[in-house]
Length: 350
Image 1 (cartoon, helix red, strand yellow):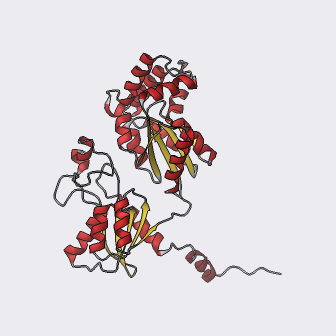
Image 2 (image 1 turned 45 degrees about the vertical axis):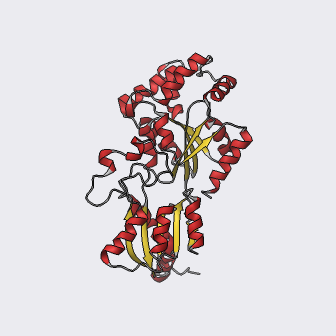
Image 3 (image 1 turned 135 degrees about the horizontal axis):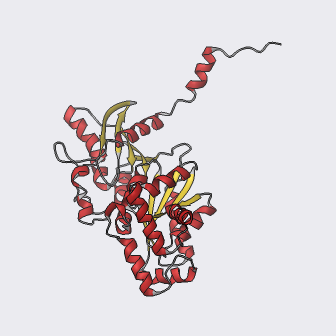
């Protein structure tokens, strides 16, 4: 018996079934809009829609006609303002605000619309969206603003977290030695995360050259690699390894150029871990690692070099890396308490 060949019509139907939903379609457009962002901290995109028709788009950046932060640097970084605070001290207009402004400029009604945004709106944007008549918000990355959530609930606006299908989650860990990123890495490995570290690339280089693996040697070899191949070399080599895995951890991020490289990649989140210096020293001594200092003086020397080596993008600068973290964990308690903090953070991405 001869099998019937599939018709062209049935083949077309099969392909049609793979079409994205409307929410997926508009969220992907919001992610594309975000690539136009000129913000040095977070690239955010927004798309205002009504009846499946795009009303306006917006991304975060300086007001029209003003110099971009890409050119003059981040004002908030210069003033050392932590993420999520003092939103009024910023040159940029948020993506959601820009989308509503576009509607105002061109006389487009936003009443009853839905906004698709790559990041959950802050309280300032939430108030604007309420007054603009937006009735539904679909967002990607959560933003910890309880006041914004309270306002939107009071206004009876429907807020939904978009769940990306087959989404990768790549978590970068940054923090000083002894802060506990190794503890977090072990916990995440139990949950199925693949582990790699930028420090592994340095250890590989030491072994290749026959150099003894000590804290000072690791720091010197890492700095040498950055000067020779560029400040992103460790991150580039590590990314090639972790990108093959749906769930992955990248440990040992210490340079600001490394952070900027990773943050340019999709589905990457930076977790900063810190702890009081004396607690960190006790942990370092207790773990008996070959490359670790064993005296308080040696610890202070290595620690200060990690926080800022004085070589700009070519050196280590954990202080700057922690400022760029999407979330910050203070690990001054037990392992169980740390795991609970990480679990609450992970829930935002499920």
